Length: 139
Image (tube, rainbow, N blue to C red; front, side, top):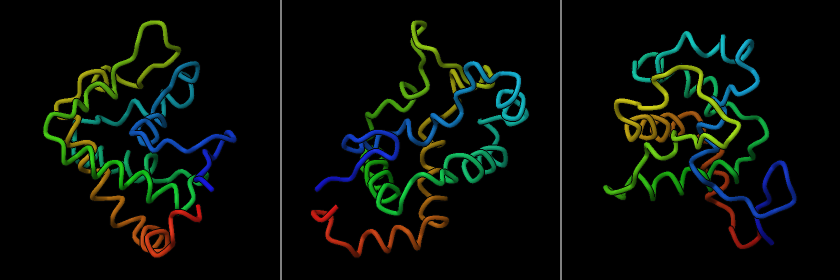
């Protein structure tokens, strides 16, 4: 058994893009882009709103997906050399874009993910406990 991706019949890879991919506004600049451009990801209050409203509010993620994501995030946060800015870099050949210029060079991309981690531990607490109580080999 293995934990499946919520969208395709493949193994779930709990990479950090699951948290920030929700801010991609490519081809939706007039709708989602307008909705998101009012928030400054470098502002603590705005960042908390962004995380709660978007990063942690993904109904297609099961409690098991949430635990896998948080465990992966915990590992990378412990690595002082991990380059969090690379998550926000978009190759010019990719069809992706961020809602504001600030997203391309955050003041502290590590802080952004630390905030995700702290808020997820609170908001997803029950889901994380439920998933942690299971035998992962049965997923």
